[in-house]
Image (cartoon, rainbow, N blue to C red; front, side, top):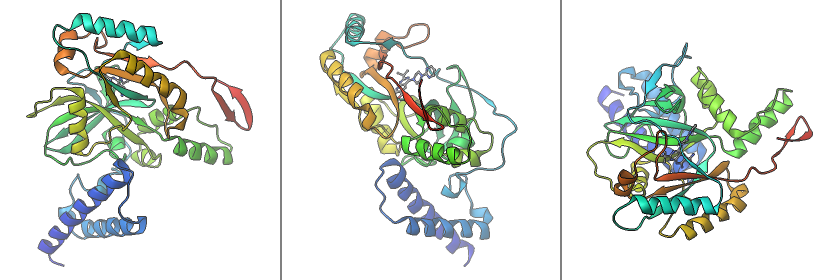
Amino acid sequence: MDLETAKNRIEYLKEIIDQHNYFYYVKDDPQITDQEYDQLIRELIQLEEQFPALQTPDSPTQRVGGEPLPYFEKVEHRIPMLSLGNSFNAEELRDFDRRVRQGITAGQPRYVCELKIDGLAISVRYENGLFVQGSTRGDGTIGEDITQNLKTIRSLPLKLKQPLSLEVRGEAFMPRKAFERLNRIRAEKGEQLFANPRNVAAGSLRQLDPKLAAERSLDVFIYGIGSIEGVEVESHSQGLALLGDLGFKINPEMRAFDDIEDVIGFVEGWTEKRGQLPYDIDGMVVKVNSYAHQQELGFTAKSPRWATAYKFPAEEAVTRLEGIEVSV
Ligand SMILES: CC(C)(C)c1nc(N2CCN(c3ncccn3)CC2)c2cc(C(N)=O)c(N)nc2n1
């Protein structure tokens, strides 16, 4: 095969594999069998080995990066990753609503409610649509560069559907089934079990060898825009819709309400049925939708006045460790 033919075939394979990654890992709706997918990947790997000059960093074959790192570089977040104020019951959500209504001068607030995924907060930067850097939240200002580990998360696109430059925030997590499978393997080996999926996600993303992170079937939900160039976005819900169109995995359970009583009903509903989810959540996040309202409300020293985290009451967690029941 000559270079020109190889170049066209490689471009085609990268495009089609990216599409199938999107269907499988982001939409959870595969369009081809695993065997057909593996065949495409194997052909691309062979062609890139045969024509190394045609291998690009955004190729799906580049997800499990190079050598283990000696340490993680520090990354300063251009836009700080803030904390969240907490609400612990319906009355405190009503207080939040009262403070919001006092803080805005025009219109009524609309709230977006999201599940609060119990994982590790991350920030990912794209330039002209290509994944360039990913980092942990750290202390909100300085995080650790974990680009190589985040590239192993198949639901995080290496190339966006539009060549935009932006920074997104999300929560990396381990699905409960993957957590249980991992602990079964560790139990069989007589190794100590992990206490919860969040610890595994955090531990996996802090591995210096990306091959270890790649084995942990981590996943991610993107929940916000840190910064974006060349696009006017006016509300959080509009921002989430744009992120979905770009190929990011957005949690489907988010809802918008105009009345805090409806927010309270939604939040209390999830308090009961969170066990049905395939991942852990430790509460809900309620955000004022309009960016103009967010601007008016501003921030306290460390967290936005336009958002609150509703924390579920700590449930009696019972974990089986080495066959005995312990309450944690
Ligand atoms: C952009 C804002 C600040 C409103 C925001 N901040 C969040 N977090 C901040 C505090 N974080 C944090 N992490 C560690 C230590 C202290 N704070 C962890 C992320 C959010 C987390 C989730 C989630 N987990 O599903 C979410 N759907 N939306 C969020 N939105």
